[in-house]
Length: 248
Image (cartoon, rainbow, N blue to C red; front, side, top):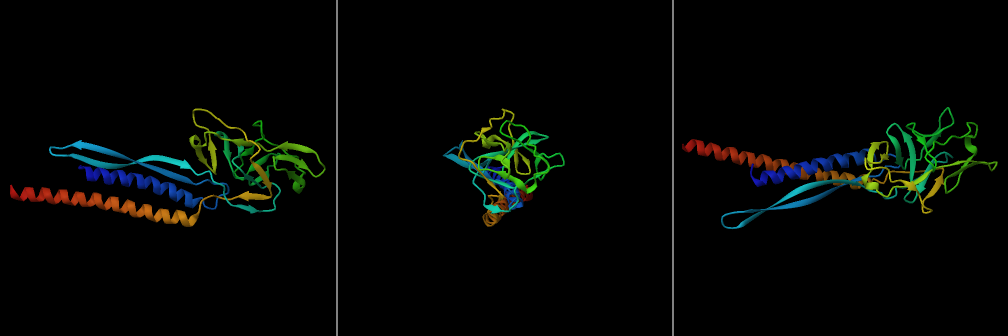
């Protein structure tokens, strides 16, 4: 294959990955606490020495992706167990994959009185232990801005854990808007005073559907151009071989 084919294939591969990321963003546009993902591209300039001049070829390189940490829109629900975060903090969850972190604050009580997510993951306190509430608290639960849980009678039950993730971009998605620490280890630590808990509200996804749809169309067009160029180069090669064969 000549350089033009390699360039086209590098573009097609990068656009395919970008297509997967953008499609996943669109699919989670209505997922509470979801953080969109963005792809990162780079270029590699290859210089080949020819007989008369140096030939430069610019290849597109897919450098992976990163998570967009921007705040999502907040909506009021009135449910006392729904929590939204304002700031950079994260909730902690107990999952089968270990301790996970996320921003989805749609919580409920399981039959044992544990505070859990809609997927059944237990919510953790600042020390990393699951939070248990008396099953008869119902709507009397009050959760302050620092995550302290109490009843209307004034008794403190516990506290919702709020965590900072210094190496956030190194964490891995496991679905349901959750992230787990990489093999290098968990660097999470208690969040500072900049994170505030809002009771009776839920943070939405930070994905903007119109923007993502526009990006998706641009990616599809770039992908189709790359495939068309590969096909054109293939047709030219076949035509050249046919002409050579007819002259021999």
